[in-house]
Length: 99
Image (tube, rainbow, N blue to C red; front, side, top):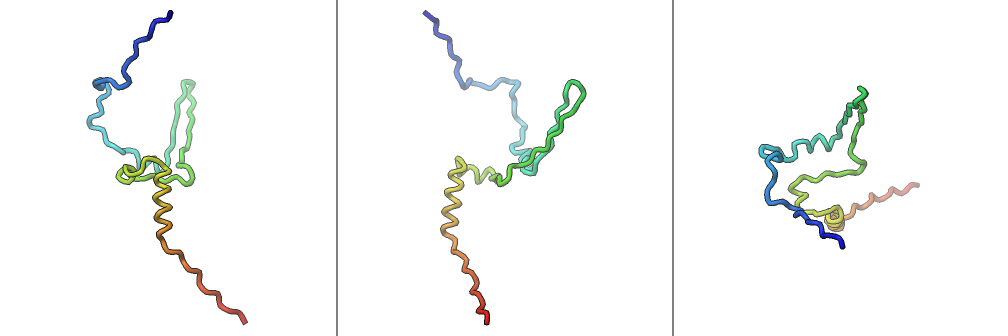
């Protein structure tokens, strides 16, 4: 018969002292991430690998105050579709009759 393993709690009571995050700034690099960035990896053999990272086409980043109201992309799309439905449709200009 196997012995039952002792399980550790998933959420410890206190954070370790080496994980002290006081003085941190929330969203410090958010603007740079929206614009894209360059990542450089220095390998042990002395070579470098440089990668340009750009946001995906069609990506939209919500500000934190707006993001608090939407748990996922589906909620954002539903809200925007509701706004689109309220917007009056544009009328096409009348075509001039040609003689």
